[in-house]
Length: 310
Image (cartoon, rainbow, N blue to C red):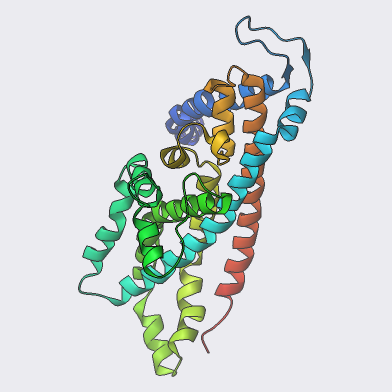
């Protein structure tokens, strides 16, 4: 009896032993840095050279939340998130529905649409800059198209704020769509065809089948893409640098991650306390939006699956 009890105890410990390396890895590279950043953010007047500070409090948070550069970066990031996430998800769904209806060339077209995702983001950003940038010798390819249709050329790289925001939004949508198309196409292919056949027998229209069968079945993937899209858009930095250069504050196009980098290594760098405070503010924003999305996705998934196609 005692041997059986010992065997059961060992069996219960096995899963934890298997997970131990993962726990150690997460503890060293994720949990410890998070607490370290929290400590840095509370140290007032921290001197990176002497590793000293003169107090503990919330001054760093107050400074960051009043810094015009941070507020500008916060505005840019929110605009980028609000525009790119729903637009890219909606376009990806439309393209995936089109690809799913083309049986013969679906795999080939899916590969073609996925190619931009495996291309270096900096390289794609440079291409976008060339397409939109005005030079002494040319107004850029996009401006040539605008002029062809009778419009006036716009300086998208060094011109008005709305023009620069248009470029970065188009670039972000272009970059994230391939991954979303791949996920949604796979989700559509996994829907049981018998559901559509049963709906066709009942005389259900295609639009009703989409809202009553297709959308509920792929809703977990849609909400997954929305959540990861929000997280990815909030972390935007390298793509903005590829288009507008390293001095994003001068261009008025900095992001929260760019602000954090500048506080650490930029021209105004050497302030890890301010960078840590900004990083934790970003963490709280992303965590809050993720929790809200998860709550909405669970509620919508249960309501969608509770419906019928009749």
